[in-house]
Length: 178
Image 1: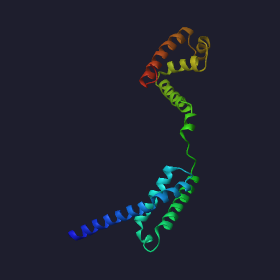
Image 2: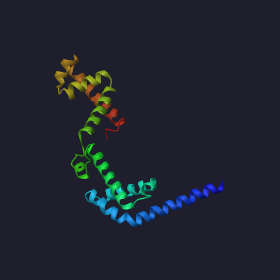
Image 3: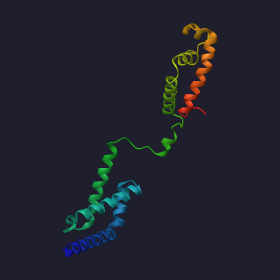
Image 4: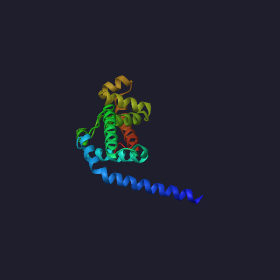
C-alpha cells in the first residue's frame, strides 16, 4: 500500500522538475512571443505563458515525440486567439479614466433619495400628507390649498407645521435628515 503513495509522489516530483526545466529552457522566448501576441500587455502575456505551461503539464504526451518549442508557441497563439475572440464577444471594459468622468452625485442617488422621501411621506397621517403635497409638491399658496382641501387657511398652516415636523422625524428615522 505504501509503495503506490511514494510512486505518485515521485511522479509529482518528476512532473515538477520537467515543467521547471521546460520553463527554464523556453520561458523567456515564450514570454517575448506572448508579448508580441498581446500587443505588449505584460500581464496578459504572463497569463498566456502560465496557461501554456499548465497545458504542457496537463498533456505531457503532446511533447513526448516532438520538439517542445513549436508546440508551446502554437498553444500560446491559440490561447491568445481565444482570449481575443472572448474579448470581442463582450462589451469593452472601461478604464479608471472613464469612471472618473461619471459625476459623484448621479441620478441613482437622487432616485434612491426620492423613494425614501416618498416612503417617509406615505408614513404620515393622510391629512398631513395631503397638506404637504398641496403646499410643497404642487406649490399652492395657503389660500389655494385651503380651497382644494376644503379646510380653513389657519388649519392649512397648523397642519403644514405639524406635517413638516412629522416628515422630518420620518426622514431622520431613514437616515436622510440631520
